[in-house]
Image (cartoon, rainbow, N blue to C red; front, side):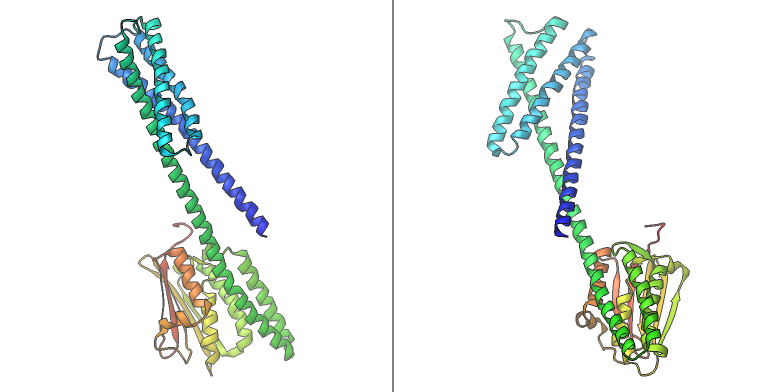
Length: 371
C-alpha cells in the first residue's frame, strides 16, 4: 500500500512539474513575441513624428527581430546560472547583456548601412557607442523582466504545490475522521448480533445483519469528502436506527420533521450517525420507559438548521462540556465541520425540555444547483 501511495504521489508530482514547465515555456514565447513586437511598434510610432523613408519600418522590424533572436540564448544561459551566488549571477547578467548588446549594435548598424544607407562609419564612433549603450540598457531591462517573471512563476508554482499539499492533507483528514466512526459503530452492531445469536434470536439477528450490510454498503459507496443531500443522509440514518430498533424493540421512538427545502440541502455524508449513536448510548439506553429521538430541519436566512433531541434522564448542566468528555463522536463531527466550513457553521449543545439534550447544527444552505 505504501509503495502504491508513493508511486501515485510521485506520478502526481511529475505531472504537476510537467504542467508547470509547459505553462512557463508557453508563457516565455508569448511574452517574447509580444515584447519585441511591442518594441518595434513603439519605435515605428516614434518614427512617424519625423520624416523617415518607408524602408525605415523594415529596418526597425529587422532590429526587433535581431533582439528577439539574440535574447533567446540568454534564457538558457540564465537557467544554467540560476543556482549561482547572487553577486556572481549579477556579474553574469551584466557581462552577457553587454556582449549581446554589442552584437546587436553591430547587426543594427550593418542593417542601417546596407538598407537605409546610414550606419557605422570610421568617423561616427560616438554614434556607435551611444547605440551600443542604449541596446545594453534594453537587454539589461529584458534580463530584469525575465528574472522578475521567473521569480513570480516560481512563487506561483510553490503556492500551487502548497495548495495541492494542503488539499491532500485536508482530504486525508476528512477521511480519517469519518472512518474513525465506522469501527465503533460496527463493533456495537456485531456485539448486539452476537448477543442475539447467543439467546437464540436467530431471525432477529438475521434481520439485523441485513440492515447492517445495507448501511455499510451506503457508507462505502459515499465518499466522506463529498456532500450528499439531507434526504439521503436521513435514509442512511434510518438504516442505522432500524438496526438499533432491533436492539431496543418498542423502547425506541423516532420522530422526523424535515421540510422539503431542507431535504434538498447538501450535508457531509454520515454527519448525523455519530450524534445518534451518542444519543442512544448515553441517553436512550438509560430511559426506563420509551426513549424518543426527534430530528428536525428547516431552512432560514440562507442557512440549514438541524436539531437532534433526546429525552435522556442524565443531561449535564453544561452540555457544551460534552465536547471534551464524550469520546471521538462529537469531537470528530466538530473537526469535520471545521475542515469543511471553516467558521461558517455552528455546532452546539443545549438542554431539552422537560429532560434530555439537543444538538443543534447550523450550516450554509447548499443545494446541487447553487453550490
